[in-house]
Length: 277
Picture 1 (spheres, rainbow, N blue to C red):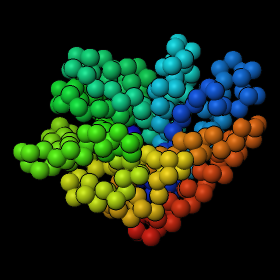
Picture 2: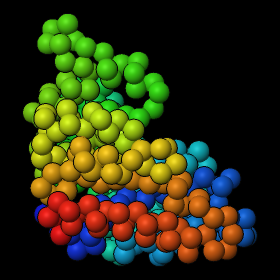
Picture 3: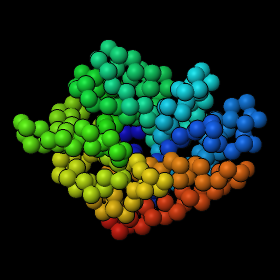
C-alpha cells in the first residue's frame, strides 16, 4: 500500500487504527484450542469483526516465532487471509529486525517478499547499511524505531550527543531522512511519549508515525493526536491487548469489535476536528 492509498483509506474509514495481533496462545479463548490452528482462528475472528474499523494489522512476531513451525504457519495464514483486502488494510510485521547488510537483505526478503507484508519495523542501531535492504522494495514501508514507550528507552534514546547536543532519537530521525523519505519510511513513537511528539514533528513533519501504547499501556489518544497529527493525519495508532483480549468467551470477536468501535469513534471525531475527513 503506497502513501496515497494509505491516506485515502484513513479518510474513507475515518480511522487511523492499527490492531496488534499479539496472539499469545496462552491468552486466546479456550474454546479455540480444539481447532486445528487456534491462533489463526483467533486472528480470523478479530479481523472479521474489525476490518471495517481498522486500517492496519500488526502481528508481533514474538508470539509466532516462539511456537516454532506451527507459529510460522499461523502467521502466514493470517497474512494470506488479510491480503484479500489488499487495497484497504496495511499489514505490518512487528519484527524489529536490523543487522549487517547481507543479513538484512534476507530479513527483508522473508517479510516483504515471502510473507508479503506491506511494512516492517526495523531497529536502526547498526546504521544505514542495515536499513537500506528493506528500502529496496517498491510500495513497501520501513518503520524505524525512534522513541519507544518502555522504561528502558531512557537508557539510550534520551542521551545527548556531545557533538551536536541532540538526543539519540533526534539523531535517528535526522540522519535516517537521508536513507528514505515520507513515501517509504515511518517511525515508531510510543503513545506514552506524547509530550515529545511536538519535538518529533519539528524534525519529521510529513512522515507517518506508528504509535503503540494506547489502551492497556496507558497512552492517551487525545494527547497523541494533539501533538502528532498533520494534514494527512500522519498517524497509525496501535492497540493490542485492549481490543483483542477484552473478552475470553466465545463472544471475544464481538467484544473486540465493540472496543475497536469506541476507538474508531474517537478517531473519527479527531479527523473531523482537524478537517481531514
